[in-house]
Image (cartoon, rainbow over all chains, first blue to last red; front, side):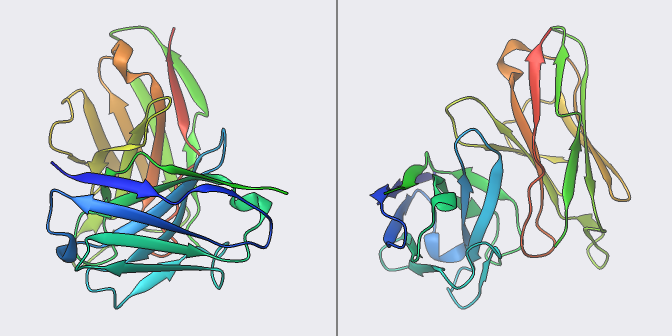
Length: 121
Length: 113
């Protein structure tokens, strides 16, 4: 059974930093691309970033480009999202999701439960 | 960026009746060499993460009831629930994964009439 468990969310001041983690189990992590999707309170889904199986290719939404960095450690079966220069509009539940293939272009076939990030002074 | 639009914003359907949700992409999401539309549908129930229902516009994910189906016509896509059940109350999102950023539609809320 595929399991994705996010952690690292919390309250942070504007301009601050936070690193999210997503621990994966139940599949061969190094064979699949992984993605982050966020959802602001009461709003729809917003795609944030994706990283291919090897970690060699990454893509970002314009809204986070230059501030967020996606990475992975295939030896630890863990996905990360380093978030810097956080803004109030980054407040959201952040979901980790498994891509259906090793490359970035695929549907998101499994999702974690999400971790809440709140940016406020 | 590819813009995804959905209609209606919300709909209420009687139990056992058909629900139809539309999604339109601002440009083609067809990868011609594979003849596949890079389009997925997700269901999100209150307090839960999204769940994949349909990928490649019309392929049902394993374990998804066959009352859910997807269809395509150019840049227009449709999710149909053939016979609405109480457990289908949710928000439904389409997403294109053809070109980055992989944009989602705004969502369609489905309720029981």
